[in-house]
Amino acid sequence: MSFVSEQEDRLSAAGVSTAQPGDYLALLKPRVMSLVVLTALAGMLIAPQPSHPVIGFAALLAIAVGAGASGALNMWYDADIDALMGRTSLRPIPAGRVLPGEALAFGLVLSALSVFTLGVLANWLSAALLAFTIFFYAVVYTMWLKRWTPQNIVIGGAAGAFPPVVGYAAVTGSVSLESLVLFAIIFVWTPPHFWALALVKSEDYARAGVPMMPNALGGDRTRLEILVYSLVLAPLGVAPWLMGFASWVYGLVAIAGGAAMIHYAVGVWRAREGEAARKACMSLFGASILYLFALFIELVVENGPAQALARLAQSIVS
Amino acid sequence: MSADAPRTEIVQMTPEQAKSRRARNVAIALAIVALVVLFYVVTIAKLGLGVLNKGAW
Image (cartoon, rainbow over all chains, first blue to last red; front, side, top):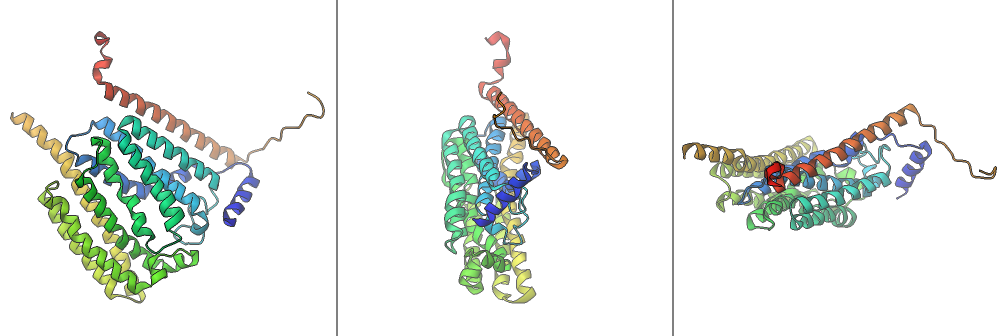
């Protein structure tokens, strides 16, 4: 990693780091953390018994910090290729604001702290699942799959799909079919979401030598797989309603969202060149973010505030 | 101390470095305080509010 040693030399010559707290926050990938918080919260709220609000909040915080820690470890390992890609070249390490060693220490300390905190405050099953999630993202995806196979984000997507399972386990001390369905939704959602962006940024990935599907196996194959995954995702997204742990309102959101995902995936399939292709990809990318947020926000609302209000109304009536 | 003792090299920080280090220190202090508060509040929540009632001791 010659790039990293150059950074070490440059910054060590300067003597003392000029990194701001915000640079360390950026290492945690706050946007990814927001999705982790939402999906883990949904996992906690679908649990049959309610969590104590304080313990639930602490568990959620630990899960969020654990996810952030894996982001810091990812940025530490990927600093060399991040420097080569426009989307990631301004991250704290390639931009020279944080030393690679500092990011590694930060990631390791936060990983240990978040797992320990979740274990002590909630239970050790959820802590073990969180530890496995961090390991899966930082080691299995970042160090192994990402630079080796075009299926990197398919398998690696499991790391992003674990938070609802961890959240459910934090409340119940177990893993259920319901939490695994939420896992499956995020797992199947990841490829069309990520490949829509990768189609636009395929030159970046090619320059960095990362075998993403578009630059490794071509745009046509990627478009086909995006369509197939979207066709699987649409009915899978409705499963929580069909299985009875989400309301008909969720069902409507999932049906409409699934139809939109297929619509935009067909758009990507059809538009293969030029500005129209780029627009179709970015539309699918944006729609996929809205889709997942809509599903999980609906789950949170109907299992959190809505159920609390129903309990309050029932207590007033009785 | 003998004249042969190695001299300690003192790094003179630039104003920017000093400001950044102070900001990092404040952030670390706030994080530690937040962690202490979190563990205290969760401990009370786990034990139940009865632990605050002196008559219960």
